[in-house]
Image (cartoon, rainbow, N blue to C red; front, top):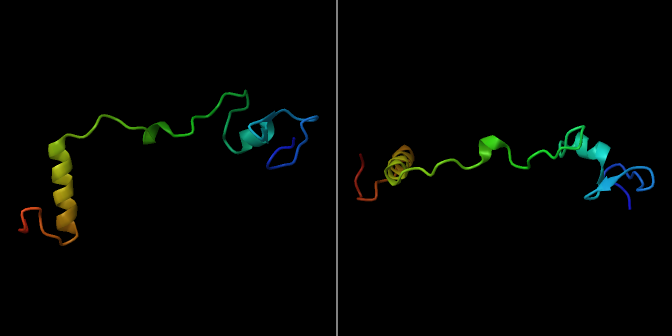
Amino acid sequence: MACGTCDADERTAEIVDGLCRECRVGLALETQDGTPVPVVPQTFLSGPAPDVVDVARWAAEVREAGGLRSKAGRRR
């Protein structure tokens, strides 16, 4: 087996999930010491769910910004 990016041979480098350790570090899949880097950054993980009122208010603002009428058929 060979590394998918640099073609390093399994006899000369450790291959993990198709990539050698050097390429995994270069592609930010793990750190120098072999610790895996999370695939999804913490900032993109879900937080508390928004309140229904907040979602309705946001939707109304988006419709108004787009020049659309509200669900009741009138403009604000």
